[in-house]
Image (cartoon, one colour):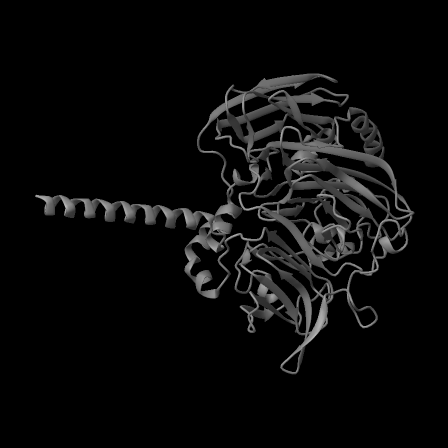
Length: 553
């Protein structure tokens, strides 16, 4: 009997040990940053509503002009030679020689990380080709894990399929994540021209499974499913649907109260009745309040990324449909109560149809509130060169996107300005770009206002001055960026966490001395005590409405 009891106890101990090991293995898999975890995170809209479980800061290596050292140097800070050529060189990390061959080092990050965005332009804007070979070395390996044509490897025709990588307007862009545990070095075999590599720099000790081609090939089915999801974004499958249908008079505001409890807006759709004035997307303002604090105050065109007028495009977080329905799929959580308001700052009545789908949400210590704000200004002088602040934030949060609408009074290109982003009180911006259009995922912006779209960025053809005329094939590439255009970018894996502060400036750098109009919608998640320098500004809206109507008329 004692022997039988001893055997029974042994079986129980072994069984418990197996269960514990299995649980630990599952937990370790959840803790591990890998191709699988990053791909799943890319399409998890709820994930970005929480401060990252694996703490990181977004960094960028680019060909920005190394003469730009400090804003106190008002000359050097605005030098615009952010490329490399026969005459200009040195806008890269260093040059190495391996096996008798030169390699130009573009990135050399020591520590755990993950590349989450790459951008490189066609050297000749009309010919998308190059002989330059790019090599990506991980964890100090002597042989590259990835090697191929600098454009072909990262434009959707090579290893990484569309839509993770794709040809944008005269550039190659890739969002496919490449994780590494110890280090990442990127080189090219010929002197580089323009480039950007955006990466997550994780905290030391973060468990990461370094990218391998073997693991990549194992995830073929997941890659396919994530790609399909990005191209055909679906709304919430569960939740309570609330609706508001009103005709708003001048200055009138209507309110939709949300269900009480710990919830989240999962889907938001807004459609206007018939109207003739394309500036209605600026005059109708979306407001939201969560747990007693107003976190959203933004004109609808800037919130949904349409700009001035209704300009259809489809993205992962937002869609503007051909029938005029504007949709948002940002997850917007609250703990107790929330409400949505629509305000008409225009001079004419506007019919508004609003629908919100609200579902349950599990609030924890990493959960944050969704915020959206707006800044508009006219005139913005292009001389002297200056930095135009999108937003400055104080507290903890994650910056997740923006939509810029400009009016350019001249034909010459307006957007040579670089983004400059400081995080947590940096002395020098950890992200310093190479041009406004590059920030928004294309290149050679001075060629035209061509329409394009991608799950994470787009340029709706917002040329209202030309009655929303879409260029014919023969007109593509004409050097005219006059009148209105809208550029928008939203973030998933390249969201920007900040622990204490974030400042995003866009450099005003046009080839012509003139006065421009700027309007930007900005989006971020933040704690209840996170604050911004953007406040409700109905006066600025009405001021811009007057100038916009004068421009269009």
